Length: 389
Image (cartoon, rainbow, N blue to C red):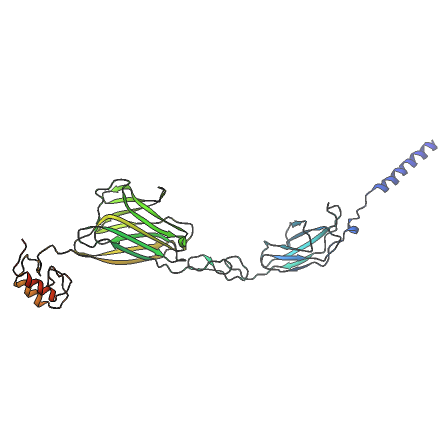
């Protein structure tokens, strides 16, 4: 009995001895020292640079940082060297950070975490481009410009507009041209409406797809340019049609309407948006061929009303004088009564060296220079008592 007890006791002791020998011992802290010399530089509103002292035994590091009082850490794995920048921070906030060293490439040897280091982000002013102490600003078009944006401020909304007729003879059918242009950095045009207080469009002979004019221009400071054809898209009423803008490839790229309004015409050339609110410069010409019929002798006022995408409005007026050429053919006739006689001579004498209208007050048919002078008197004398039935 005693012998068996002794053997059992010895075997158990042997196991305890062996177990003691094979228990692994963590020697990482001895082989890989925790980093020292922690300091923080280049602290701004949103970023900082974390530094520590060089240790030639270290292969790489692991960083962790957080806002003081936060429950979780931001972890940065495998930074090398002795410096690392962090970003995406919050201004005027205290942060705490620590670093751990790894002395083997397989992460088997590592140190404990270092002592903590803290820093406070700054609260410097930030410009509209997100640059701390930057000089970018919002211009009157509500775009962030200046500073590091590379953009310049927009300027006042001052489009240039002109409207012209191919003839100003009363009752004649005329080509009518609308031209608009803008300088670079003006607010974009949102809509363009042109009206008149006289004249009328003649749509009576039109059918769908008739070519009624052309358009040309450039945009984007000249980056885009081309010539387009204007065609009847649809006949909405006897006094209103829609016009499609077709490029050289036959593709429709726009549409607008023209119509007869109360006492005149209306052209609505509203443009689609282009996802920004300033222009790089543009120019556009719309030519409508043989649609506008001049009124009787009068002065027509054309009005352009152009709105920008930012709510600016530009209104311009331009006047065109429509006149009727004399229909009396008799040379020397000063009053268009069909005969050259004492009445014509009297008109010439009474308006001598004055500016007058042709065939009414002394500027006789054949002279028609708007002025009563020797040429008018000569025509009266040379055609005395002659008449045209």
